[in-house]
Image (cartoon, rainbow, N blue to C red):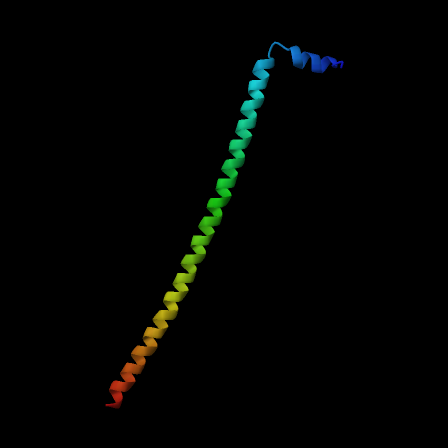
Amino acid sequence: MQLGSWARSRWRGAGSIRERKSVSVKGRRREERTQWEKEREQLAALRKHHEEEIDHHKKEIQRLQKEIERHKHKIKELKDDD
């Protein structure tokens, strides 16, 4: 198998160890960035979930407060009937 001049220089180059190290560092950085982006997306999804839960609970509180007022009104009507 015969290598082209570019491949020969890459294979025998004085900086080949340095180049391989650079490639591995770049690969590691790419993996770290991918992991960081994945974690960021997960955190955004978790934040959205919690915001939706808060909204749901606020609506539930409003519904229960209306029920409390309705019951208070009925108690008042019963007192007025006495």
